[in-house]
Image (cartoon, rainbow, N blue to C red; front, side, top):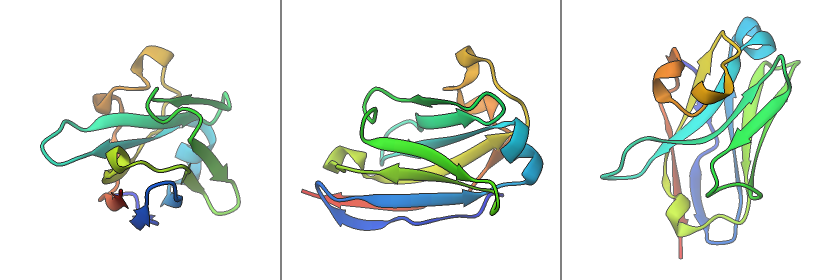
Length: 125
């Protein structure tokens, strides 16, 4: 399990920052991602970062508004969410794998071995 925190309630246009802890190995050489699941919908890819390559990937729906970053000293990865919209409301999950995923696998849920318990994000209109 990956401890995740930072969810909450915010008005449209506001911001939240989610954080997730991971092992040093995963953080340094693996891939960490964020997914979300709204009620009645499939869990979908939001963002990910391959640490050894330093590359980040985003879903089109969040590009330009969300940013993945990491804190080496604390072994945490964060998802800064700005300009939130009501459609961003969901349970957000942190996911990790010790592998540097190939690009075609980045957005696949089954590519990640470890998952957090999820944190609720609510956005009011």
